Image (cartoon, rainbow, N blue to C red; front, side):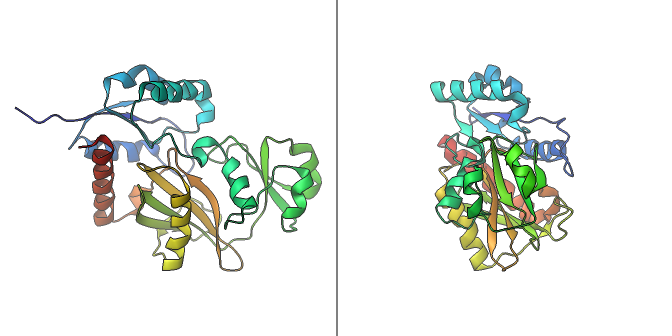
Length: 275
């Protein structure tokens, strides 16, 4: 008798027009590799709630900004929680999965985050700058983000947005983790080309910075991406902790590192399923 293969529902929006990335290529690659060990079906995020009962685990990958299907996503979360359906990443995350409030909380607690406020009364907590970044508390993929001078802030800051100083950073760097294990890092050496990425070899100090946010979050099984910028003083500052559906830029990796990531992904899923 053949051994039982776990049934995996892979959630992705293959047609989402991401800037500088092709979600569909990454998901075609990952599902092809997951099929080596699991029975895999792929669906759009709007269909996940209706289909998930037939599967052992639901894997949320490049599903696009939740804003585009907020009601369906809320229904999916509610149903999965009520039924005990295994969802990967686990729905316990308190970073981007729950909105951007965590940036306020981490900033107020003194963590190495780009200084962030959501009220005009707190603007004095930010370093003085010619321009500010304003972005929705509920958002992703830079949807709704704007860069404005200080005199425009009163018309925009209404409690639904975050305000940060525009940081003249040297570059952005992302750290990719499976569960709590670091797998690889990539950086964008050109500040005007966020998704023109190259491999990055982190220092011990860099990894300590990134691991601090992974340890702070409440996801035991899942893939997370810590996005940071190298500030003018040389320190790293958190830009965001993506714990819902981080794009992985696997096409930038060499074959050995890509295979290592896939192996870690499969092992994480098996551990999550108890197999």
